[in-house]
Image (cartoon, rainbow, N blue to C red; front, side, top):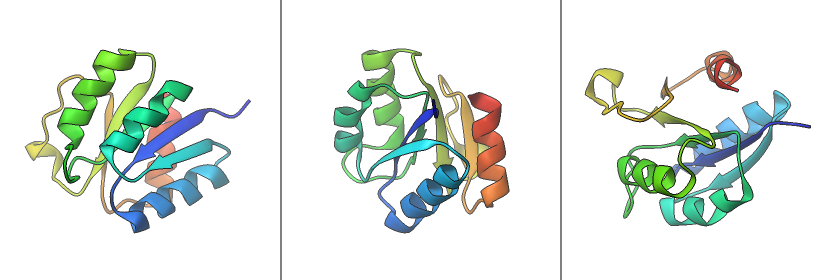
Length: 114
């Protein structure tokens, strides 16, 4: 059975790219283009959740906190962001992907976590 990944990102180009790369890598992928939609979809159970930090209304930081309250550590969670890693609050997160990313770097990070 394919591992399930939820991608939450308000940038449709990044969302589509990540979805395409991960599906070609053999993963089952669900997308959400904002935090509220992501919170609704998380009840379906995922192995990994990829979160953009800079989103309107509900930032990735706030979303991570809410997801941890809702599902604790039942899924690995990583940030995928344009913000340099040195400027990112890395508390309670399982990984980091720097945007822009290559298909190979995205797949390698996902494989290392699930």
